[in-house]
Length: 375
Ligand SMILES: [Zn+2]
Image (tube, rainbow, N blue to C red; front, side, top):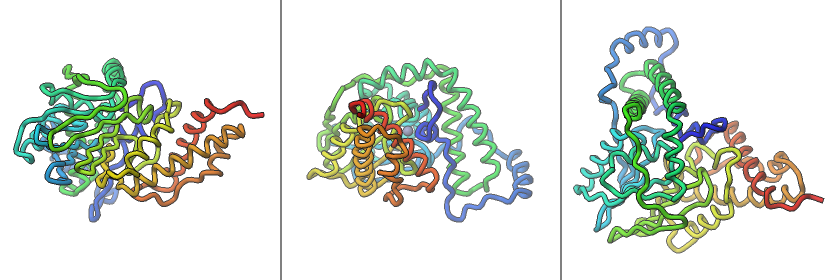
């Protein structure tokens, strides 16, 4: 997703998949001189990506009934849950062609075609454009999603040039990577997905809007399993939800949490932190505590999620104190320093500090709205 009215913070950049692709062990980028020669050769030899031969679907089977699927490392994760009465698909990706392949793979892995519902964890394009491969299926989302999806479509004239530029940068970078390496395969798949998405949007493909919405929580019955959809309150967006499948001890947390980032929301967002905490507390400390945590773009683990939740609480409580005192964000950071070792977080210290500061500013602004004026 992106927002057009604000500078793009890390969460948005990440949602646009602009972070560098993590290189696998043993994957070596060529030194500069060889890279130039190599780029020339590979540039000439590069196959046309128009038919997207490089788009690959990776599948992780969490259990007999649960699959996690993605086409490249920075892609939003799709989760498929099979119950006796049908299959539920959460966040089907960012392009129709990508979602079509994901759907085929789900049907092949489960050996059935009865997709019963699609759920969007929030409105961002990387989670909802794939709805277009599921037009025959009810689409379920929070009631705040549809208006945001309409705004996205209205802003395509700003979105598309940026995606074209970004994809061109990816293509240039691809030519510096060793063909056959893990990084080459991953970036190649990302380019193929982006090219498909751009071509689809240019030719008028639009994501089907949610056909069933809710404002607080909703349970979808799949026979042998059921999925609780729970609104976070205003969070990463206005319509973020979690998906909890107790029979599988599965919790899909959407984009409030990232494996490679700390930021929760866009600057100046309205955030309902007490509600995040009550929702998370009820899930993480109850008798049905989950075992599998799927974040929007990777996994963070139960320990990781608990640690993040505890960090949110500490920062929120700190923000109340500082707001009452009429002090600033530096005072809050002194009270609540950047967390150093969060399980499941892959992030360098400088970025960690920057993102923690962004959270502190956000929380303090929210707390200041409630706090009485200092004496
Ligand atoms: Zn996302």
